[in-house]
Length: 68
Image (cartoon, rainbow, N blue to C red; front, top):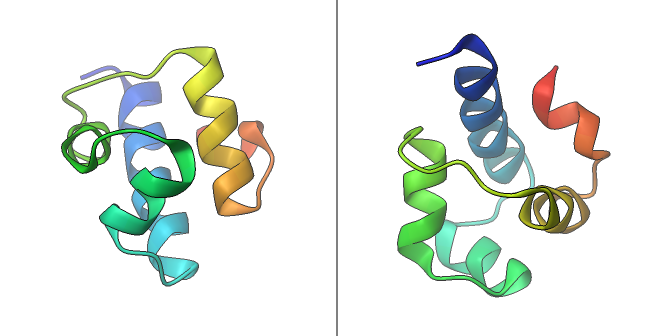
């Protein structure tokens, strides 16, 4: 897995846990299936720009924070 994908997937989980959201709650906020959130966090799926922005907004962060 490319380092950027690993950083991204780890950060989605890190920020989700920090916000005390479970996968179901985050999936509801970004209007996707809970299994998709799990696949993102495991690095099995890579979201498009629209979903990256939705995730960032739901997590209360800037999209760039998901890559740092």
